[in-house]
Image 1 (tube, rainbow, N blue to C red):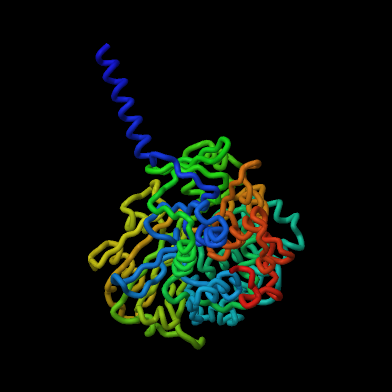
Image 2: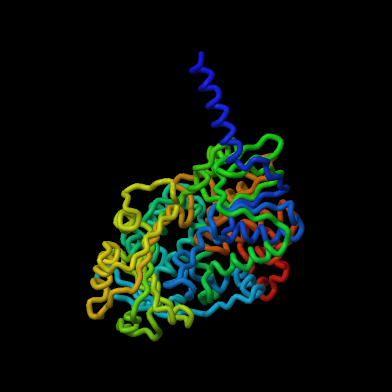
Length: 521
């Protein structure tokens, strides 16, 4: 009997400590925004002036930015992105924010060096280099010798004219193979900087939605942010903090329930809310408990989403050795190197003043070719765990990560003397960007409409790049998911987001430019 009494008292103590550690008195908010990446920060920026202290913004990290991570070689030094690094000319909403917050964008165009099938090709990154000098081939879609970009554009045009052909293939690779042959598919795999597009399994409808936008830009200019891409988030959150909105950091939401209202729990706090805007990607949402999270994860739309793993390695150097790489037949500085035969996969080199001054380059961008190798070197694991982002920083030139990178660089540029770096930073991200699984019954528009109100009758929305695969990879895509929610649930107007004021359709670039998008203040 004494044992039972003691166990009862112990249970009371344990339960009391759990209640105390769960934030004691619940924090009541009218609206909760989960996450301060670009999507969550923009949502908070737009709602904070109206909701004031009725708005709660919850971030799991000690910093704002989410998956946008900028780092510096030394504390207090200039920052460089190890994830997002650029804004494209037709990202009208990001460029508008840059103007609004006085964020400097520097243009950076140069030469792309592609090594594939034992041959070297040099071409401008804006796609203006055509013909055999840039690498081209004929396919059954045309007798002309087309570059990879021209072939992709032809595939999109053909499938839009013949949608019945798309329905015949559950896997995008099989559709491409049917249209341009095995040789054509191999050509696209060799020349495209991402393995994801043509070497991995995807839904044809979703990938065509993405490629139609990605390869449809009329203005190919590229811009880079002085101060790093996280500057956008910092300026947005500075504006939020100037209001009475409540911002909570180091608060990972581990449980999401709903009865009359939403109950959100972190290890230390409980939040009660009438409305929730959740900038949580599928990888992390799967780790949340509760009836709301379970209902989202069970949905067919959610199950169709496919996160992609990406590894990057960034290095700071004593000298810009890449400036000694010979560029044949194409004017301009080397800004990108593509080689799927080596584990570098793709290399990015800054050709704009802010980046040049840092002697920095992203020497590895791998989304499939050698991920097991980079996973082992960066995480010291062979399989994923519950953490979505892993970082490995080293100044030890005997580190296995440094050894592997230097081996591949010297194989890629045998005639160039490459010094050891001053610092190297490896990152492995389980959820870098998202498309849809092969066989998915949905197109991108279906997913975007679902994410605006995934649980009927509940004021809940999912935002972020994961729910807009037409704009996969880009901050612009994350912004557009928020604008759709603000337009359809909060009555805000975004006539320059997309044609006819519909946030799910392609932007009308003829009418909408950063200068004309005046409704963002």
